[in-house]
Amino acid sequence: MKKDMLKYLTLLALMVVFAVGCGKPVSKCTAPEDNAPHHYVRGMELLADNKADDAAAKFERSLYCDEEFSQAHGGLAIAQALKAVSKNDVGYKKVDADKAAEHLKQADKKTDTDEDKFSVHVAEMRVQTILKRGKWLSEAQGHYKDAMKIKVDDKKLLYYDGREAAIYYMGIAYLDARELQKARDMFSDVLAEKAASKWNAPAEKGWKRVDKILRAMAGKTAGDVGKQIALRDSVNRGELSALLIEELKIDKLFAGRIASKSASDKMKAEFTPADTMNTPFKDDILTLMKWNIRGLEPVYDETTKAYLFKPDAPVSRKDLAFALEDVLAKITGDEAIATKFIGNDKSPFPDVHASAAWFNAAMNMTTRGLMETELSGDFRPNEPIDGAEALLAIRVLKHALNVQ
Image (cartoon, rainbow, N blue to C red; front, side):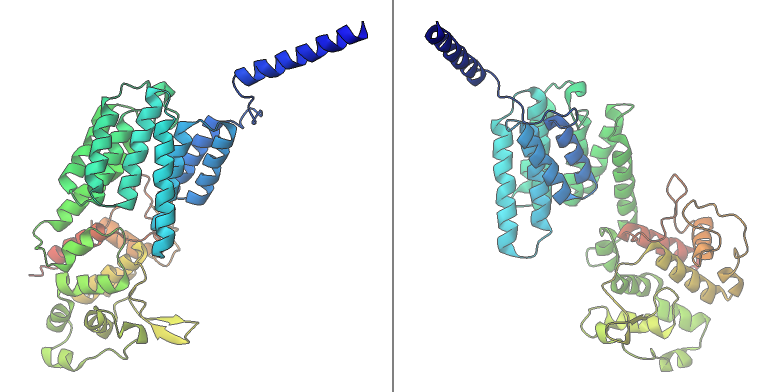
């Protein structure tokens, strides 16, 4: 009897093992939010915040929960591509880029649904745009066309939410390739695709940026400093110095309006900052220093114990506001410009208090149409000024001052 019972239990155990082995693997992640889709979506959100390392950890956890989850491989490919471009060493770049390519292969291999396939094509577009290897734009265009042929159920797209995501990232690709008209068209198509979409806000921002660049580049020739700067995400202090000299002709303008020609010729910068010796903008910087433009003065550096110009440092929006306000005050001879709004009790900017040192400059720039706020009213004083906005602000001032 005991032997029969032992045989029965042994057979039962074997049947259970066989059933488990033939069925779907038991999930290693059992907590409600500890699952592959959740970690994937969180990883994509972290990518949007430029946190590639944190995003990669989420994608790894997603694959731990479900090693067959295609979209997590796509997310890892994007994260690895971002890591690659953040490194200077060619060898390390190649390692990360190769990892991105391998994850794309795995993503494509493990696709199960149309939504998986769509997500992989978008991941391919994004990786091509980030790495920019070989004929990357053609590759991105090919994946865009393939993505748009797929009929997806928006509700089943875990992160992208709709086909307009592919249109948006094709717009980004065209923007990076400097095909500005095509980029603007793509961003416009996103807005036309669906009345309410998570991609409408970034597409509108992209459209405005491209439109701003096109307006800033109008009338520029290929060799203009302004045309090159208009495409920049940020402008450094050396570049802004060159832009002010080229666009406003500061030296000639000031010499004619606030100093005689003979006096101007004798004027020089008080000293030559050590960090300007090897910059191509040295002459522009020294000319600007001669006129003591506020917001672009040399600054004391604790490390070197010396005053440096820091030509490679990005120009913030408040720095540009200070500089243009100072130029305006000097040219018009209206010293009240620099204090016009001081004493106001309230600020129209949610992010700039009326007592802030740059409040007056921000008010002068916005009320005179030289600079714009966000729709929220934020002035964003500490954010880098992009090239197109800097050029447009200078152009408005140029017309106001009637500079030829």
